[in-house]
Length: 453
Image: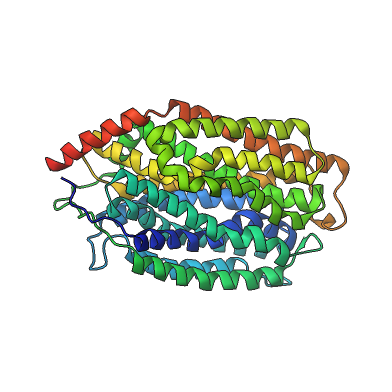
């Protein structure tokens, strides 16, 4: 019998605040970090890619360790996962300011060292917050409709957290289509303060309602990883999560380069964001009804098919009018919108599926692996400045104009790569085994299994 407390509106909003806080910085770095490294610090595009690749390699060690640490930790009076929102959130906010602290007059090697150190520190602290935060949803409720709503509210929070970067930054930190380091630092300082406030609200407004296991089993990394690799649903959803992150960050970065150099209209990035995400916002009130009628997998497949078609068309057309480009991006984001809203609910589904198969509840470890795959997506997104550099982008020509062949190459890498990512995501979702019928069956079997514990 389900004796868990029903989640309140305050719980949902509190959970959303946590992701809003994280996304304030995450979205800013997703769109402007590479540009900051190349245009302000004058770090080569290949060096930027290496820095981000090294950071992701370290995450391969750091993330699972954090997952096992959190899973093995006994709950405090505030719960098992909530304390990390404050304990990790404050240092995370500080690291964000450090990344964008520009010290003039240093050597190229010094800038590379500082960029690498601060970015890797940010990634470690992001894990300290993100793994417990993602696991928190699984202990707030076991009800599918509430978990779906938590995923939606998380996406709403993430969307709200992305607003400053998407709408205000083009007007505040770009001056004559060039990035201003002083304005960017001030903006990130304000963001850091807002992050801390939001994490405190999230901590105060959320609750852990699902009791922990009374006799937790001994965990072994090799056994857990081996069992996860045998879980087809988990593997496919991890790939999808990786590419969802990669496509979002990649497009966010290349669009900055594209609009300031190819279109010469950096200010239109605000319009791009508003028009691109408006369809997804309109869809939010209907998500739960769509899930009930069709299922998460089924709608994700249709949506990704739309994104594939729209991204392929914009690649083939090679548009020169920024308004047509903006319109096509609205269709791309409409297609992938449902997956964006429900990816966290599906992450919990595959974690539950893992519990059903192994009879072990390891949500923190599972989420750590999922988080690591999303960080792999960040590494793939780092191909944005690498590809832009590969086609001839020269940071010394910022504001003066890149050559024609470079601009053509920038358009190609800005549109072809997202199409490939959407196509792979579509293939994975077609193969994803947890359709509507299978998910309902899993819930019933898992409920019986938990009663037998």
